[in-house]
Length: 304
Ligand code: HEM
Image (cartoon, rainbow, N blue to C red; front, side, top):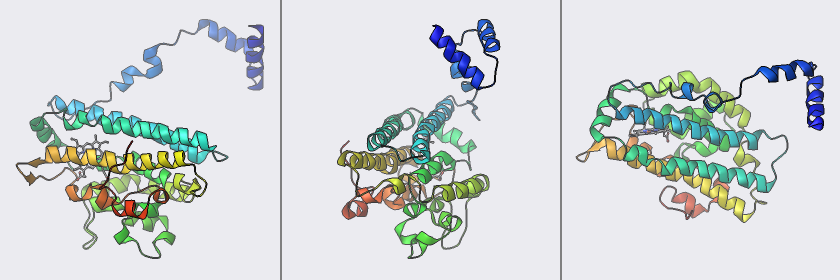
């Protein structure tokens, strides 16, 4: 105990703070509780629905759950990318495996959306949400920027020989996700995309510039990685860029296609075409896939 007290004393002396004041404060402070630590009241006050349909609550909560899981993914990516010295291979692999587990949670829980809401209710309350769309969830875009160079987020048909050397703002104009809201022939843009860029474009440009050459794909040395790290990177790429997108697309189809007719989404994209991974061709770590696998992106499964 006295050794502990000594350590506390040293700690506060180093902080130029009187250790006695701290110890007296400790005497008076109340014990911490679960509800204060987890911020339960605040957390459960954040679900604001726009209609009286009960299933809208499920929709809001599940999106919030997704945001929290995405925050866990970003938390790992930041530690990998911002580390002062490159992480040892086994720590890196451990973190990639954590990310895989988080994406698996997102994928396996997506049945909360696909099976968990009444079709009729969903198709009523969603009408009050336009032009908002999950498309505007910037957390997905931030994860992409942490994982790879923007060049790997551009569909092959929009790449030229000079694309890789173009400025970050110019590369952002070519990213696959622009296709959800922009007609490349006419230049017409949707309100969903305009509002998204109005809010996030400056931050995305800054992120793109900061992460160029130091994102996850850039710092892994493809010639030196072990087979098990390679297989973890393949799983992560597959789960985030193929498996979850397909679960999401299947869900969209189950709610937005009635009697064989495709209905308009809240964001007004050509969603059935756009959301398919084979169309987007989004791949974080091209070096861990064969040419044949890249050519068939979105059309094959990998064993888990
Ligand atoms: C019933 C449930 C859902 C349906 C029917 C649905 C439908 C759609 C549609 C049609 C789009 C295309 C953009 C548009 O035109 O609006 C889209 C995009 C998107 N949604 Fe959902 N969505 C659902 C749930 C979710 C959930 C829970 C999330 C998690 C945050 C989410 C995240 C996204 C993302 C990130 C995009 C953009 C995808 C990309 O750019 O690749 N969606 N969604």
